[in-house]
Structure formats: C-alpha cells, structure tokens
Image (cartoon, rainbow, N blue to C red; front, side, top):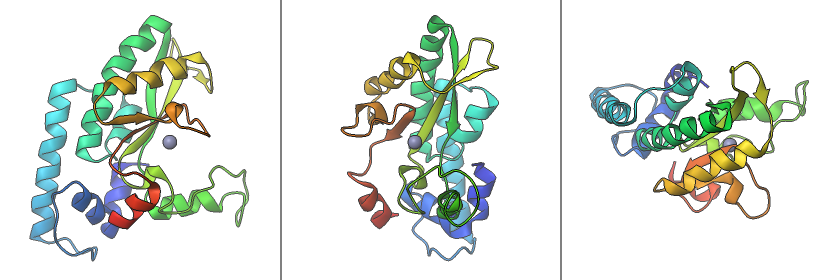
Length: 198
Ligand SMILES: [Zn+2]
C-alpha cells in the first residue's frame, strides 16, 4: 500500500497518528489544527530515522512510509544490516509490504471468497498484524534485482537479523506457523490487543 492511500482514509490515518502518540483529538476523519500538529511531529520523527539510517530503494521506501515513525526507524535499522548481508549472499533485499488499512485488508480477504481470484489471506480488516503500522514483509531478489525469489535460505539469514534490533520480532521465530518474510515492531501481545488499542 502507498502512504497516500493510508492518508486518504481519514479515520485510519488519525488512528495511526494517535498510535504514534501525536494525536489526542477525535477520530472523525476531519482534519483540524490538532491533526496538522500531529502530522508535523510525525514528519519530524520520520526525518530523524532517515538521517540516522539513510534511504533505500524506491519500493522499500514506499512501504516504509506506511509504518509508524518508530517502526520506520526500526525498519531502517534492520534494512541497513539486511542490505549488507544480502550483498554477501549475492542477492538483493527489499521491503515489499507494509501497512494495509482495514478497507484494503477486507478487499484482500474478499479475494477467492466473494470476488474471483486465489485466496491470499485468512485475515479480515483489523485481524492482521499489517493493519497497525508496525509490520512489514521483505522479499529476496536475484543479484541483478530482476527475479523475485519466493523462498530460500536467504529468508532465514535476513529475517534473523531482526533479533539484533531492539523491539523487533521476526515471523520466523513464531511457534506454529513460521512467517519467514515477516518482521514487526513488538508493541502488542496479540492482534486482538492491537485492534482494541487502535
Ligand atoms: Zn507479514
């Protein structure tokens, strides 16, 4: 998803600003002075992360932009290590997924159910870790960047780097279903808790 889509969903964007700790106003989708001040604080925090860890490829940047500022910073800290590691492994790494609004998640959920296509998720809006600005998925690409490698041992090597970044959790460490390309900032014990707060 693009950051612009997220901001176009007024209430969702206000919830993101609130979860980031910058907004205490109403969740009504109407932008006022409180929201503008929150957006300025958000932009400043994003800028700090950028200065600290630098910028990555366009696709990664588009996805990072959908995360909460503290998750953006953590994603950059992880990416810096992941890019170096990927280079040693002869591949490229990019962040290929970030936040999805509830509406976008519902659309995805409908695929293979009420609309044509292959089922891609079991989570409806509010039931995915990707609905709260904290989670991203990465992809591994061939050394020339042209071919997407859907699975391979590189996922374990790159995902495991998240263990060294404070606050991060890697889906490959989950008990039960191991989600190898998934990394998130650990702020909630469960999706249910995240949904409650959000
Ligand atoms: Zn994921």
